[in-house]
Image (tube, rainbow, N blue to C red; front, side, top):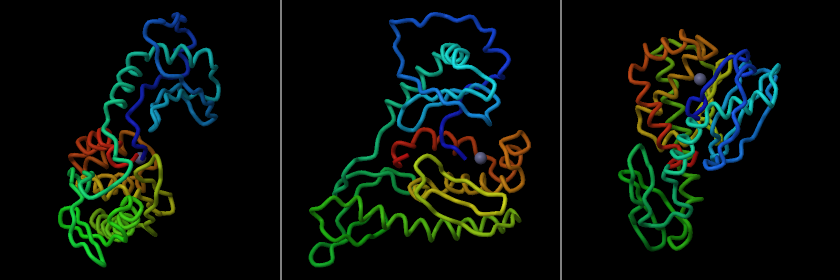
Length: 249
Ligand SMILES: [Zn+2]
């Protein structure tokens, strides 16, 4: 699944006939990147994780029509950009006292023990660190990843059994722009950053990927299947949308 907020989407037929409206100079928007996608059926406007708007031109579309489509969605884009600017970001460097999103709550890195084998803790989780004066981020992120590998993998097998889905393998990785994905062959890939999210949210992402083994698309039938196994999935989507920046996505 893609963590990006839902983008407006219309059929290839209509934008061609949309009259070209001159850009209003008073309301400058960020530079839009135009990308042709031969598999796309529709014009599409999305905001990438780094805040760059990307307009997709479908196989039979034109850049001119794509520009018109973007102009037609100026309001959506302005709102998406404003929301992106307001999103709190994760601290660049981590030290004792830094607050992080950890298991769904803003949590302060606290000193557990100093001396020869210093340790810090985040709520109930304790982590060994080499040097308390150094940036703790590389060490802690590595520890988060290995913890995520264990926890998300076992949770996925558990939820696969509960929903009677046949999976082959779980891989926990460091995708930059995805929370999870799955293959028809039953390999589920998850982003280690899900360990930073509340349990309900990471369960939702796992269930979302599991339901793709029933429906390899985002059709209405797919969302019905998701709702069946995860009735509150919309709330989880909102959380992911609002907290992407805090978990480094
Ligand atoms: Zn999906």
